[in-house]
Length: 132
Image (tube, rainbow, N blue to C red; front, side):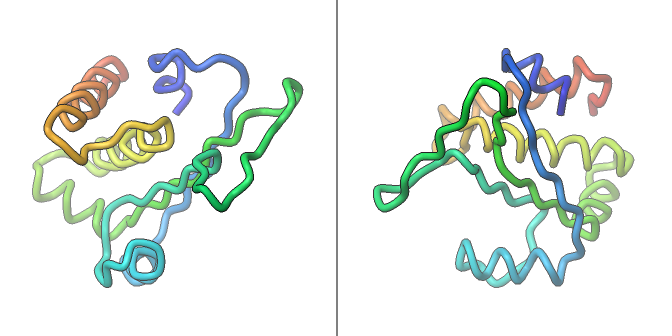
């Protein structure tokens, strides 16, 4: 994550929580928070993202910025690594970066946003030595 933070131009200290889980556990989270009752590879929860009903969290300069949480299914990562023909290290790196970029506000809901996000993913993974 430190490499991705530098590549994205983040300054100051930032924190991200990464949790590795099995399909059964991530499926429960996916059902509860996304309404999809199936396992998935990665889910991100941005801490500083607010809705109309929420109050923004205001920190101070002495505290690190907490970006949020990334949940990764090891079961799904193993299957996808095999399916895509690369090792588990590359797949975990990809999923962690994908979740991290979501925490920074990237998305892939339309073609333009997808092109931007996936372009950043490829550039960062390649610069770190996790190319396909």
